[in-house]
Image 1 (spheres, rainbow, N blue to C red):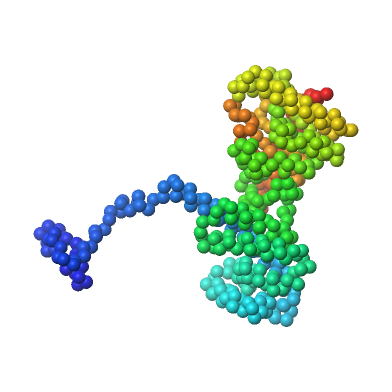
Image 2 (cartoon, rainbow, N blue to C red):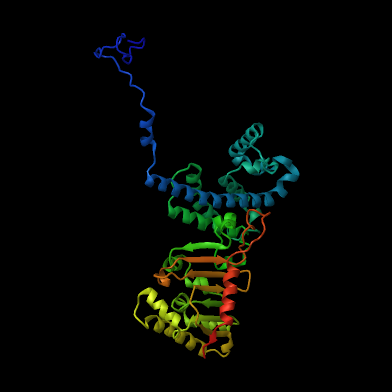
Length: 415
């Protein structure tokens, strides 16, 4: 019996305490478990790993948006309020701007700054100021308190406050490492993009008007050259990037493929007509419906003979009718090629820095609707986003653009 009234574990044979009889009221101490017995209880199964990775991915995306918003709002507050308060209050201008209503939280920020100084947490001298220690709600409070100062630069106060309200839920979830639902993440991304636009930080990429720049792409896009999206099939592409967003407001469309269904069947002929009439240019390159290549493609897909060729011929006839209504048919060119088709590509404004391309490779047993899709952004080249010392190796966009021009030069016009 131990001094604490606990029954000690039995010893080896021939030693005292060997008896298996336990007196009433005594508590037996459990033997240590074998190390190998702990592992299975601590292991995560596949579902648990999937869940934690999903949480981390969503939290990471949300953190990037929140970080961008907070940095931008901090810069705006400093640009507007510093010239008002710094001439009188010097380095204490943030404390003065907070006023009596913000004494509690601004003094807390001052204290956190001092602790960070002592412990060496301030790695960048530019962060050694009280403003860097204010949270998003506190920056918002400074903005609201001094709205007359911000009004000349921001059109709608309501837009700013609504966007910050929507971000507050996400900020609390991310700061406490709790689960973030996809719906809340999407809301946060929309609110962040809207707020950054209101605060005057639109993307510097010209193509962002057609395909908005994702915050994660903007920071780590150099990992994937100029590929900005990958979709398992065309259905999911159109769900997230509708044909109206791809071809709407285009000034030039170059398309190469078998039947060009993405354009012909998902974008109206009237819109293409207006594009050409407004000074744009359309060049469509179809696989010749009478070629041997289209017969081989029919055999690959296991469809009836002539089925694919009739579908392509129907698309060509539809585009010819659109072209016939133009005063200048030279702005709308249709040609056919006889070679084995290797990919389909839609190059929108491919002659400029704001170009977008949608590319699909042809697979032997897979129809075009089911093939994986790449979305490319012209001008988004590797080495320009994070690693500025890298040599710019370019992206995939110029490769497909060059291939289109070579195919176009070798093809025949459709009368």
